[in-house]
Amino acid sequence: MSAPKGGAASRGEDGARQQGSTASGSSRRRLLMYGGTGLAAALVGGGVAWWRLAPTAASDRAVNILYAQTLEGLDGRSYPFQQWRGRRLVVNFWATWCPPCVDEMPELDMLHQEFANTAQFVGIGIDSAANMRKFVEKVPVGYPLLIAGNVGTELARELGNASGGLPYTVVIDEKGAVIHQYSGRIKPDTLRGVLRPA
Image (cartoon, rainbow, N blue to C red; front, top):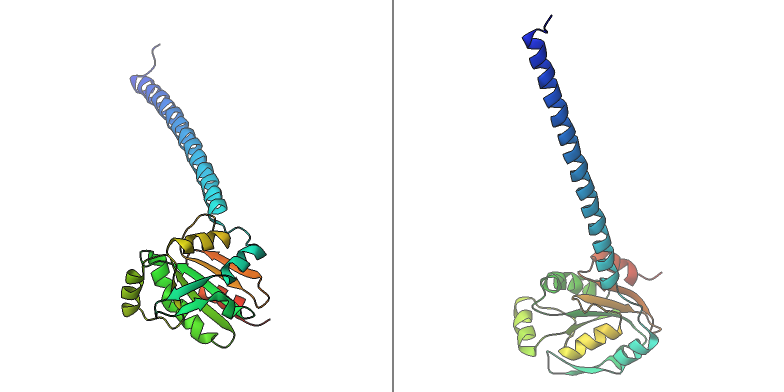
């Protein structure tokens, strides 16, 4: 006796579904494998990027190099860093062509006003005097902005900015020790916590 036609068709459809489901399961496994590999690569890449961009420890020698500098300010005066020895010092390396640098300037100025009695803020421009002057016409800043050009890049590297990225901020305590380094745009609350007396 022969099987009903509908049964054979049904078995054929079931077999096709099983093959489709096997192919689809195989595709899913392949996608999961590729996705997992991609995620692992992204995590490794992020870790390497963090490692390369993370500040390195700044030595006493680096702080002494900074204190030995005298840079010209936008106001035409000379600013010897030695004058700030014994005071908490916030040094921000920036440039007018760096969007996060420009974005954080009002926040740094606000913190400068808040901690005017306990900390000295200084902006070291890795830029031309002309560009910096145009910038402060639009965004006035109450702390000294000093013109350093390429010397600023070297100073930032000495102070732990191995990647050379901007902005880069360093806090030096009253004893001349680097107590905080930050690559990228500052977080005002983090910096406020560093500047508050213990």
